[in-house]
Every structure is written in structure tokens, then in C-alpha cells.
Image (cartoon, rainbow, N blue to C red):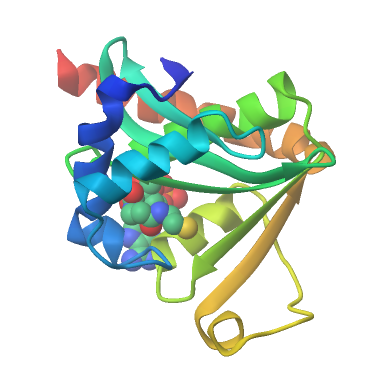
Length: 181
Ligand SMILES: CC(C)(COP(=O)(O)OP(=O)(O)OC[C@H]1O[C@@H](n2cnc3c(N)ncnc32)[C@H](O)[C@@H]1OP(=O)(O)O)[C@@H](O)C(=O)NCCC(=O)NCCS
């Protein structure tokens, strides 16, 4: 199980995941992304220290989803994520757990922000499960006010929540591994 920086060879796979209707409908930007746009985007993010894109491999050499951290500054960032529509149930929990450990434990970041479309009840459920708290909207545009839920999570809170989730993550990993055999 690995989180690694995305590379050229991952681009077409990621574009397929990103343009899948189940992913697209949960993104703020919902238009179909062209290959040209996608490659230009990769050139932009590749050497940008404020953005980090990671791919998650549950089994070595078998990517299942992406996690991204943006607006990285002052030990804080925002995140987002999506998975292959074919990923087995439970994989999201495993990937997000891995990403939060990377962010808070390995990178020692202090705070993580998130914005989720209010209609995305699955993601909202996952944010609550991972201990995120609702953030207040201070300066609201219409889309923020009516369509977005904002969340945040602090490093100190994650260290407690990760212990509570350990058993659940272990069971989900075992179940998925047993289905792969
Ligand atoms: C979000 C995503 C990564 C989750 O992956 P996943 O493998 O389905 O996640 P899991 O199966 O581990 O967890 C889903 C959880 O949501 C719950 N759930 C499923 N459908 C739900 C719904 N309609 N409303 C509320 N909760 C729901 C499941 O019961 C499960 O919770 P539990 O494990 O506590 O029982 C994946 O669905 C995805 O890529 N979605 C599209 C992109 C997206 O929404 N990204 C987030 C943008 S903020």
C-alpha cells in the first residue's frame, strides 16, 4: 500500500477517473476535461510547491485513487480525492486514512481544510467519520453558501481519531484482500 507522487504514466488513468460521471458530479468544476487541458494542468502542478498530487496503490503497481493537497502554506492545506469507479467498497476509507497519516504524521502539517458539495452525502459522511468539524463561512459567495459545506481538521484531533478508526480500517483491508485472492 503506497501513496506516491503522480507521474506522466498515470495521466490517462487519472483523466478517466476524473471524467467518470460519478466523480464529475461531485466536483465543483463539472465539465468534461479534455486531454490537452489535462496535460497542461499536469505541467502547471508538477513543480508547484503549493500543490501536491498523490496516487494511491492498494497493491503495488495497481493504482485505485488520487488525493491532492492544494494551497499548501503555513503548515496548512486543502484536500480533495477521488477513486476509480471500480474500486471495492471500503477502499475510500483505507485511502483517506493513509492520506491523513501521511499529511499529519509524516509531513507534520497542522491543519487541513476541505470543501464538499452539500449533495455529496457520502463524502460528508466520510469527513465526519474522520473527525472533521464544520467550518463557518465568513465571506460567502452564493455557491459557498448554498452548495458547499466547509470542514477542517487539526493534527491534534487526528492523533486521537486515527486510534479509534484503526480496527475499522484493519477489517476493511482484510475484507478487500480476501476478495482479491
Ligand atoms: C468519496 C469516495 C473516495 C469514497 O470511496 P468509497 O470506497 O465509496 O468509500 P468507503 O466505501 O470506504 O466509504 C463510504 C462511506 O460512505 C457511506 N455512504 C455510502 N453512500 C452514502 C450516501 N449516499 N450518504 C451517506 N453515506 C454514504 C458508506 O456507508 C461508507 O460509510 P461507512 O464505511 O462508515 O459505513 C468515492 O466514492 C469517490 O471517489 N467519489 C467521487 C469523488 C468524490 O466525491 N470526492 C470527494 C469530493 S469532496
